[in-house]
Image (cartoon, rainbow, N blue to C red; front, side, top):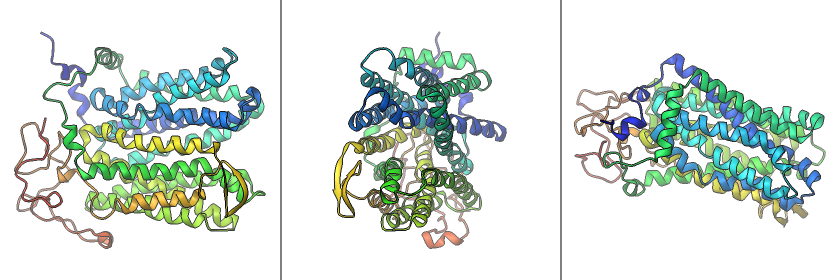
Length: 505
């Protein structure tokens, strides 16, 4: 007699959260994995000028190659999150990393296959985007299931810091390799390191049995049984889901505008400035800022502040205050002041890792990967738009003459508008949290109305009347922090809740 399909997909032991040593080991490993993800991702932008000279590309053709990454990246966000929820995020990450590592290392060979260099490079970037698109949704799924809520923000912020490490590593080592050995060596370097990381994870952290089981499930297809089918239609009627999507879109638009246009902005506005200053300093500031945001978030939660209040505070910093600095960046004439504003804005954007990114994990741990994939798809579409923008030729009254590559308004101004728009749509009491019991199909609020199969929330303490225990007031009271009441929290505008809105599995 064969076991039920669900038992073959997920081993019950995988649902146990990591111990402290396991969490530290996996955090370091995933930090390195994120670093190598960005090493492979930014290899092409670093080599674009040299490749354009070798292959005779103009700006439009080079922009086509660079933006094609997001064509594939948009398509696999939801798929990666769903696979992570079903077979385990660590397996999805390992399988995708082995594939994108091979493609990155083979990129110079693809360029030599024929005379259609543009077509081969565009195809290579689309494949890389398809494979890397599953990484962050699968990572979100993995951390939501394996990391305690009180440690989740710092873990995600630490892993997310790998994006800055990878950008700086490829920018430094890639520039040297580009000068010494040619653009081909940059792809060999990033692809080879990725494959070494895959070998380490495979030999030391995962078993062959787990991978074979995951491959078998993928080969057979993910059949959805009656007991595991999630009511997505009801899920997307929730305003909190759309708030998360809009917030992620705003954060991604702001980030991609700065990532794509900040060097051009400094070069055009301050022609005599040093490139290594504005290309390195903001990203160096972002690393400690991201780690600090995670430590601060977990510290506040451990001291008794409500998770929803802490997530709001981090989102105000990540979108609101960051947007103010980037708006100031667009209206300054001093190089030093511009670098300070750019560094402050990029550094504060890392607070989003402790806001919207982990809030999706709080919102629905059992399908966090899927929801993050949906939200990040919107961000990836924005990335495709702003990576393709260098093909535009426009004039601006603020910048006399024609500026190749600038969109229809000054980049910092547009980035700041996106940040403030996302913040305003997110802050006024609509930030959802798992203890609301609104969305999760497996984890329901602790108390008197659990359905069979629902899990009691370990993060909500019982008060004298059976409800959550009140928390002390403190410095976050000015942001709307109020002690928890001793009755169950109500959905917005709803009457007494007798049953969870979504059934337990």
